[in-house]
Amino acid sequence: MQSDKILNPVKNGLCGVIEVPGDKSISHRAVMFGSIASGKTIIHNFLKGEDCISTVSCFKKLGIKIEEKNNQIIIEGSGWEGLKEPSEILDVGNSGTTTRLLMGILAGRPFHSIIIGDDSIAKRPMKRVTEPLRKLGCTIDGRDGGEYTPLSIRGGEIEAISYTLPVASAQVKSAIILAGLQANGVTTIIEPMKTRDHTEKMIRQFGGTIHSEDGVIKVPGKQSLMATEVYVPGDISSAAFFMVAAAITPNSSIKLPNVGLNPTRIGILDVLKRMGACIKVEEIRTSQMEPVGTITVETSELEGIEISGDLIPALIDELPVIALLATQAKGTTIIRDAEELKVKETNRIDAIVNELKKLGADIEATEDGMIIHGKTPLHGATVDSWGDHRIGMTLAIASIITSESVVLNHSSAINVSYPSFFDDLYSLFKL
Ligand code: S3P
Image (cartoon, rainbow, N blue to C red; front, side, top):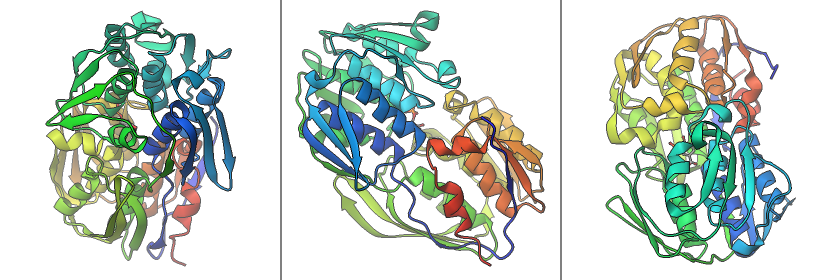
């Protein structure tokens, strides 16, 4: 991955309107549900990032007809039976969501598949999914007893289980739900902390049944789903980069229409408000089952806060850019309970602490998060994305306020979730 980019700081502030691309989590799920449902599913505003393209490619290899027409993704599903034993290896690329949710789907299919991914995927823990799926009766193996890819899955008849999630992970929860939809009996999942619930919402949208109350989820088995039309809202995790950019850059105001505001994803709004940011959320409406609205952020005087506990799953993907935000806040910001950052696309605690330090930030890693002292002026340096899209975008946003230019190595990692990121960013630069 050779893609170095020279990034120059902004001179006169940022101003404009950005419609961020479709939500990554919802785009993955729309392809998966369209592939297991019966009939024609149409997806609008699908995220054409590398991760979601990996999901499309895996389902094509599983025999599903998926095509793009007039900017829509059209899937011809024939129910669970439409999935066929793949003759090729299923390559998930860099995508943890594809890997884990696909494992749940394959657990109930009566055939054999092999899943591989890139170097980052090969280091990400999979036993958190392998173990519950084995309890349902699926045969799975992989390196280190099923912890790492390549994974080999032989699915078939599976039986419902009751399972308490050991980690707050929507990917693990979703994998068990997807297997549970195919099992004999009612699968029960106990979720100690609320995580994103797009899977639950989408099951209902595709005509299925799922109950969720007080952290207990019940999925009746042997369900058939029906095709539908999906409108994917803008990704709040992508919008977060511009929210932070506006807040930390003098003379700036950015408007972000059509952003998904699912309550399980809006921790970034809570953080910005508590830090004292000038932020408005308006025109809130419900699009299908997902709330959507317009977010406006302006240059802000920020103060350090503590971020921990139940809030972490609602902003887990935003923590790298929140660390940057904290470098521009007066006082100390402490991030706790975020060990999960260590097993994302890269160890995001190490990555962000190392790279922001190169730019002059006062930041240190802790066992389960970071401590950041602000406000610190940032200077030019050569930094690296570590092959991680969110680290790359955080550093690109940092470069807006540095005193000299920044060289960003491995910037193409950003294509995983936001291929048009730099075009959108530069459209905000005031002349
Ligand atoms: C995702 C869930 C989160 C998140 C990831 C996408 C999803 O991971 O970090 O980017 O789509 O379910 P975990 O559920 O493992 O925390």
